[in-house]
Image (cartoon, rainbow, N blue to C red; front, side, top):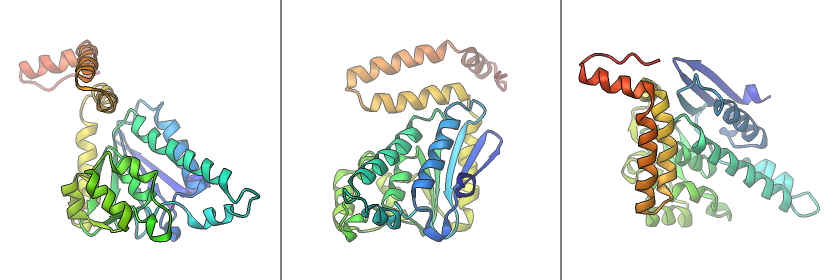
Length: 262
């Protein structure tokens, strides 16, 4: 079931994951979350994969949580309290798992990215979107404030912009999402796949060990004060400098030749 819900294609060090439930706008159902967690666990141990791309099948990237499943959970004796707590914990684990993957993760976005789907875009390290994509944390429109999606959103865009989206349910257009910092670029729909692939190939072509240590340091230092951030990243750079391939990369640059990385 998970294989059908989440397709994976591997080529040239790039793992492309496709959310494959187009009839439900790729909602983050229990099954979809389990499939994503399974791939995150696999990728965390996968030294051959250098970049991960996430896209959605059909007419949307992801419309958020599966409201039908959430409604069914209300039939429990506790009104769904335990099921809802478990759902949001599992979703948070998926989101933090993507951030903690050693590989950079790129969202390839089209159609809509709503609620937890917008959270998924904000969680990815980079994002490329079709220029007609819309982004929203619109749960407030049905009486459910997007509290967990706002964690990733407020770490991407300015607070006042985020708060307006959260309290009004307003959707952000792709050009505004670029300016706000939610996505890296917006391109014509027909160019989306090629532009995302080009970005993934560029990153995949760098020294994988340097990108991996750099991604970890990127998120670690963001949670520290200024002095601690410099102390931490200085130690990371020392470790990076001692890599054999970094020594080779610097020598190749000085000698004006391609590096011979192992």
